[in-house]
Length: 347
Ligand code: KG4
Ligand code: ZN
Picture: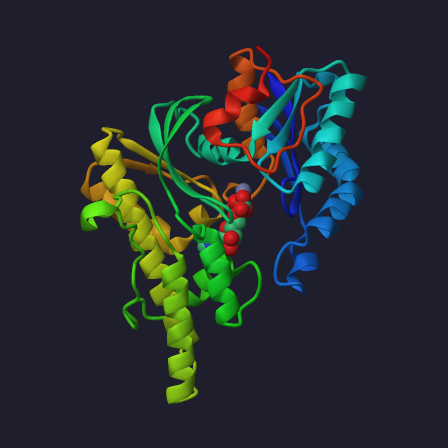
């Protein structure tokens, strides 16, 4: 069993973890959210500088908390795509330096593969094939996980990602950043049936809809119109009811597509990943629907839904166990499809 030091700096968390196969020995996450909050979103240049300031102490702390000196580490893993290139570069430079200095193998990891394998932290026996519902700030996809490194995209969003929709609607409702947790909190006290909002559908030819694809931009516009209308009518802003109705619509839309996709492809497990996997409405709807259809649904532990390095270590362990390592020339890439992930490893 290998022990991996994993680094994640693709967006606004500087994260380092030590993982022994599927067991977390330590997980350090330094969030930059308080810094980016004042701008209403992540400022890439500030993110890179912050990573640079924090990365060395985060590595030292992760090793200390795991009680493992670097000499007891078998490989160094790092998120190398997709993400903000300047931010990725900080993690990649740190990982390469450790790999060269201590003569360790380097494992580049696709960020979304990390979100998929975060489910191993709640269900260590998880093995492909299964369906992954990826719902983060930048992605909303249904992925057929055939094996580690072998993926097929079955559905995706045609516009906003689910997390992005939460963030944009939160801004409309004058809530803080990131919007997902704020809407989730408010939705607890609101009425999810208060407003009927449209669930985005993707039109194909012949007036048919793509069954697994989603669209959230129409829903966001509907919330905007609703906010304008209620403000105009009586000035009172039923913010909790709007938040609850929005969350309900997103949760139902994702649940319907994930369940249909799992059934159609004969997959009995749905593993959810990404920041929106923390959403209470999605958790409730998906768990209830999965039970009804005799499917298994998995969510990562709450703290491993949003960005962290433990999930990167888990995905890296899968690759390392299969003999996959990356060249020292590994570069950061703002875009890389999950279906192209094997490009990260040497032949
Ligand atoms: O996976 P993640 O940390 O970063 C990306 O890879 O994008 O996801 C961040 C996204 C943000 O859009 C945030 O608003 C959303 O996840 N999020 C949530 C919740 N917690 C985080 N959305 C809905 N409900 C939550 N509880
Ligand atoms: Zn993420």
